[in-house]
Image (spheres, rainbow, N blue to C red):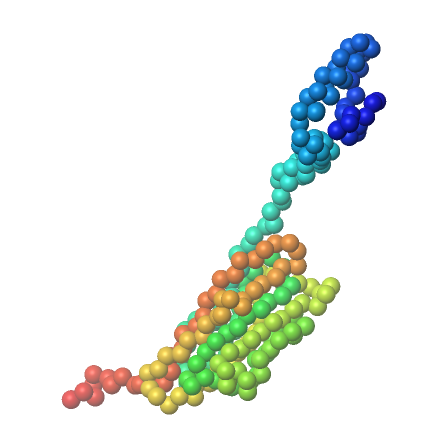
Amino acid sequence: MDFLPDVPAGLVPPPPPGMDFPGRRKWRDGLRGRLRRVPMGGVVVLGLLGLMLPGLVLLARQQTRPVEMAAVEQAQLSLVPGRATLPPGISEQLILQSGSVPVALVSTVVTFDPTKVQLAAEVTTAKQFTTIVQKTSRAEANTTGKISLVLQVAPGGAAPVGKIEVAQIPLAVVTKAANQEATLTFDAATSQVVSTGTTRVILGETGAVLTLNPAATPTAGLLR
């Protein structure tokens, strides 16, 4: 193929198959004329677009393929009992209801007012969670009012499922004031449950309310 003086030869496509020589020459001369009327930059852009088009079509097809969504399950962290009276002391159970989801890791922070209640002993964790990534000590918790727990099942270990006792939190009242109330709450921003598979767990939390030092109510027979 002859080179056009102002058009790269590689950008001039071959004539259609089956065309006789006069027709091929006429077709080529007409194409030369049309290409010469196109600015050189436009010719290059057209050529590049022609080269890129198959790749763009393939990319578009790949991006429009449906994406498989991970399963989503609901789980619930709660403190049991949800209501209690102190004194005497009490041990709150940290319970996880995971439904049918096998649990690999639990992370949460329980907050309380250390001027009203404090840990009476160290927090104890369930045996299923053999890897204790983080557990706040009694001394630190009684200063900050926060119990941080990050507990993990050992790799290859049996993952708990259903109703799971995560930890025991022993509490004692420290305020002397009568008719007080203390709440134990979860920090929702730090609470997380990770399943052993691809299931995404949406976590809810339910804290506890403690009545402290309730004053004795006089009976009717003493009011004379």
